[in-house]
Image 1 (cartoon, rainbow over the protein chains, first blue to last red):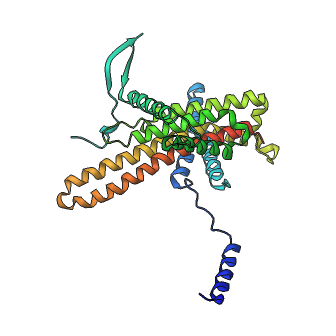
Image 2: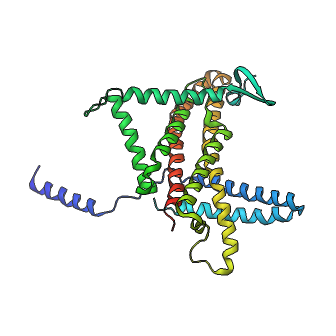
Image 3: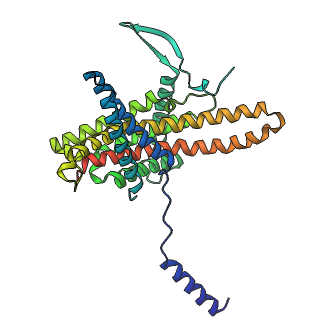
Amino acid sequence: MTDNDLTKLDAALQKAKKTPPPPTKKSDAGALRCATEMLAALLVGVFIGVTLDKWWATQPLFLIVFFFLGSAAGFLNVWRTLTKKD
Amino acid sequence: MATPLDQFAISTIGPVVTVEGFPLALTNSALAMLASCALLMVLVRMALRRPALVPNHSQSIAEQVYLFVAQMVEDNAGTKAKPYFPLILTLFMLILFGNMLGMVPGSFTFTSHISVTFALASFVFLFVTAVGFYKHGLRFLSLFIPKGVPILMLPLMIVIELISYLSRPISLALRLFANMMAGHIMLKVFAGFVFTLGAAGVFPLIINVALTGFEFLIAFLQAYVFAVLSCLYLSDALNLH
């Protein structure tokens, strides 16, 4: 190994150190996680809607209202899951 | 005919005692829980029987697990969460042992039942909410008021935030239960193919070997995810924005 090889290696090392490491892949931010977040919020929304309808005998008014509120909460959950900066 | 779902059947062990018309008995699920608790306690006791400054193998493993969870709590919930570290460690180890004992052929996986995972998740949810109210009083309710929202939109956003908050235990329970159940069904289905395909059954056999390894990964990962999410929820309750 000559001095020239070593300087080349050194230059390559310096260059490698300067480039930032590739972003690490999130371990559990996959499709299944988003699906459960979405589903859970929808379940809560529909449950609240059905319960309120039963109390006030207003079928299906609150079911419809809370279905949409639940899906909005589901999107909020998915958004928070995916934009978390860890 | 045996189906892939037979492994989840609950059966009673020993006598059934009826209390006020409500039958009480030891089930295979409860037995699996007791077994994982007992194994956990015995293993940790054995590991720390003769604590030394330079640890032997088993003591080293116990210390690594302790440090791993301590680091996880600090990373995800901050130093304020230190007092709750024992709870997170207990939850993590119980779920981990439950998942891992479920990988023993013929054993019962108690985390594959939503009643169990939902009970665990509800406990975390109620505990975190109680901690939030205890630490901040009614100011904890400001968690439901997102920042920078026009007054006109506020009633709508509060309801959405409330639903999002209430969905936490359900998504926590659903994730653990769905992962464990789906994985164990898949193992049984491919095991069934091994026999029905005759000589070609060697291919599903190879897949099953890979799936078993994958299931071990899932068993660890889901216990980890449950503990991390508990830390994050705790962090929300401790560090109000």
